[in-house]
Amino acid sequence: MATVYHEVKTAADLAKEPEEYRTAVSKIVVSHAVNELYGAQVFDEPAIALAPTPYAKWLTCRIAMEEYHHHVRFKGLADEIGISPDATDPKNKKPLSIFGFQMKTWPEFCVIKMLADLAEILQVEDLLHCTFVPLRNIGRITMPEEKFHASFGKDFCTELCKTEEGRRQVQQAIDDYAPFLPQFFGASGSKNNEIYRRYGLKERKNEEMREDFLNRAHAVVAELGLRLPELKAA
Ligand SMILES: [Fe+2]
Ligand SMILES: [Fe+2]
Image 1 (spheres, rainbow, N blue to C red):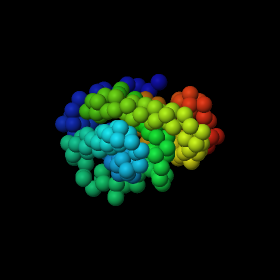
Image 2 (image 1 turned 90 degrees about the vertical axis):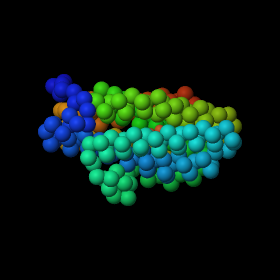
Image 3 (image 1 turned 45 degrees about the vertical axis):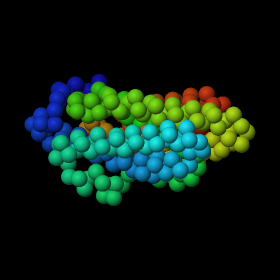
Image 4 (image 1 turned 30 degrees about the vertical axis):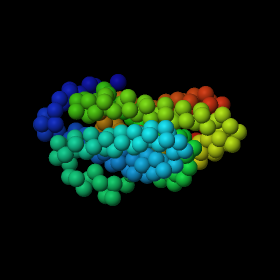
């Protein structure tokens, strides 16, 4: 068990911390700010046009709004701790591989919400205990929304699975999208992750989170009576 690092209560207090701690916090804040924005741009906002009913469109608008808001929250913290605006612009930072998928259909969006937002829930769970309190606070207010996104995905997948064709489309979307997921947790034996754990910014190793995610993803997909393909760890 790693030694527990002290709590850093405010953005102003962060300035007094060693450079390694500040850099680690910056990396986490930038990663969330970039990926929340990129996800909203490539998945959530385009999905509004794919949603098949007014009700589904309304919920998808709400999700897009919340994902943009997640970006706004992390970006606000980035500004507060003096991160350059260029650093949180997806044009300058390569977003995560899970956004490399070319989403074209409504079942694909539902699967993305069911599985990628479950992966996001695991990441946010880690923030809830992190030693940098402003990040912990963002995690706390963001968590119920990420849970809503994942349950939205599962509910709409369940709905689609009521027809033979819908069921086939959901399974196809799972088969196509799932291979993008394991890398979301980063490399096994990661040096960055070791630093994050040393400072209490993260609790778990990338490989531990990935394994937990895969177990949870298997369980969700099994509830639909479908299967998750065999996935290679990063
Ligand atoms: Fe989000
Ligand atoms: Fe989300």
